[in-house]
Length: 197
Image (cartoon, rainbow, N blue to C red; front, side):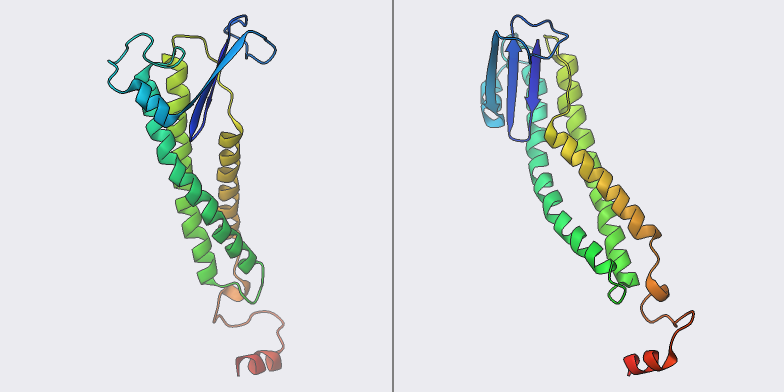
């Protein structure tokens, strides 16, 4: 049995000689693991003819590994941007929960960046899944099962949280209809006049 741990910086392939291909090598003893950085994978595959047996890493051909390497390295910057923009998203949410600070502008700057975040993170996860997970499953010379790693699961949770955040920004009305809107309902006119003076 073989399992590949595909990350943004490294590729770890664990192979257990006494495990059936259909089982993950967690309870087997005759196991070896190879730990490669993507730079090492590219160096090993540099100049190797496409489809050359043994040119890849433990049954995974070079063309698939290089395609996955390019995608993983491309996603490294996206991972940093996602973490950085989460801080601004949190600040926007904290602003909108205060009635006096909420406005149409705050709603707009909550919706627009979240739309871009959902599209960029969703496309990155989709591309990583297509170029790494599915490609390695279907082109490997050995039986492989797929299990989503903690990083992929965490970014999927980020994506779902962004969808929820965007939905909440969109459906949450602005108090009073927005900044500068006339007051509605039972409002003390003296308070409104004194606060605007």
